[in-house]
Image (cartoon, rainbow, N blue to C red; front, side, top):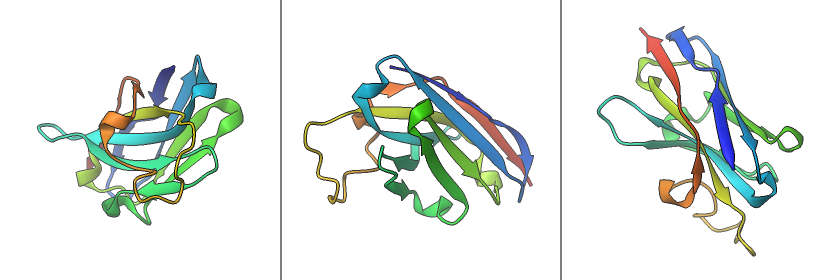
Length: 131
């Protein structure tokens, strides 16, 4: 599976950006897809994730501002980022997890971290938010 993220750029605080991530290859083999970000000098941070049924999970700091969505037919996920803040600055990575035989979709760990569960990831796209 290959992942190609795009849509990053420069924005001022309060503005919006929309990221896209297209999956190719053995896309039938993936279920949960996620966005992670990494600010300079910081650790990789979970942002949001979504499964093929549209179940979503968000990191607390982006709830109400960011929306993750998915187009299964196009094997693409999106991250609509509204109300951007300087602390949203970082490199955003798209990741994907292989399908599991019988996932517990009701479990607290079904979506979200850790990063190690996502076997596939692509190059990042830079988001820079100025104050």
